Amino acid sequence: MSFVKLSASALAITAVSAGSALARDNVQVAGSSTVLPYASIVAEAFGENFDFPTPVVESGGSSAGLARFCEGVGENTIDIANASRAIRPGEVEECAANGVTDIIEVRFGYDGIVFASQIDGPAFTAFEPADIFNALAPTVLVDGELVDNPYTMWSDFNPELPEAEILAFIPGTKHGTREVFEEQVVAAGCEATGAFEAMMASGMSEDDAEDACLAVRTDGRSVDIDGDYTETLARIDANPNGIGVFGLAFYENNTDKLKVATMSGVAPNTETIASGEYPVSRPLFFYIKGAHLDVIPGLKEYAEFFVSDAIAGPDGPLSNYGLVSDPELGSTQAMVAAEETMQ
Image (cartoon, rainbow, N blue to C red; front, side):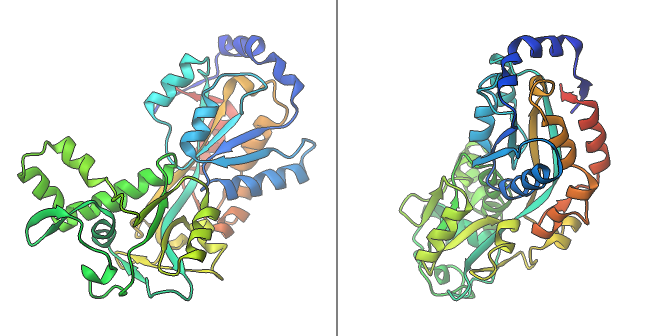
């Protein structure tokens, strides 16, 4: 992705379009529930250490946050969207259609996606992508044939898993975590079980087979969670047999309630995510509205503070909550300082 310095013409547009934003003196942020705990820590520290009001940080999911970000410019729109995935081309187009043309993409670190369950519940301690696919797909491969998923217990398809009812609480489609869950776990499981190959052999196009691999069953055993991880945790609390999909940071803040499973034999932690050994990880982002930089007090300072070594570096406080520092953090710091926008 290429970048350019925020242009003089863009700054002129800022003065016209967002001049009224001077009526608001606090930074407003919304988006990913995965990024929420990190952004909340940064916002609190920013308010304590700078002569600006503490930024307001809301959740809602990556897609919802980016949708709000793309609504336009001005004091009634947010300044930053948090995301656990990169912004999509269609979202960039929607932003542009609404006058949001100067977007700064900030990658600040990496996080893992973990599978956790009640600490005193069934022994869900080790999963493979194939296990998740066999549990949650509407169509699975049984004795060489594609059939409607007949499995009701985890042990039905893998005797090493608990004899417990299948019940999984997964991120809803508006969450960036859902995309990573689909691509790195469900799709991988579809291939590992041979289901993808069988779909292709049945006459499906490659695109249709790929889409079918990402589908989840709708009989109540796979439950979409549209809220944040606290809702998933509440569902796990109420359902001893349930497993939930969480960000590593959230799990590490709730180890008194949850136990985590390995994936493909690797335990999730900052070391295995940093090394790439743990197979389910993703970069984390926030997006800055360039048109607001000169009119929302503290916006640039907050962004620079967020990506500073003291905050997002390997020894910063975010690392204590599961963030894996970005090896290219120095380049990100320079990009934010220079206000380089996406092209």
